Length: 70
Image (tube, one colour):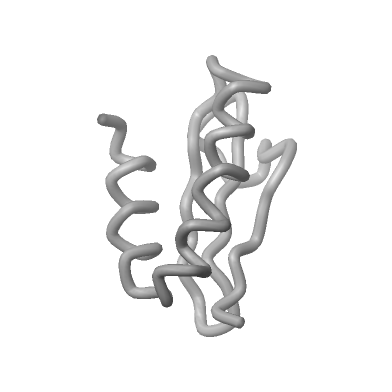
């Protein structure tokens, strides 16, 4: 399991189970669309952001999904 996957599972585990269940398929879809991309996970006050990048540099992120608590 990649560190981004571990981070995602840790952070999404703090969300309500129905919200977490609806966000996992979106994250899985990102991994299917761009399987060779690096996963980037950011937790802030407003959302859990899951992104993909050709490298581990945030500035090269090409796509992100925000999981909001509501």
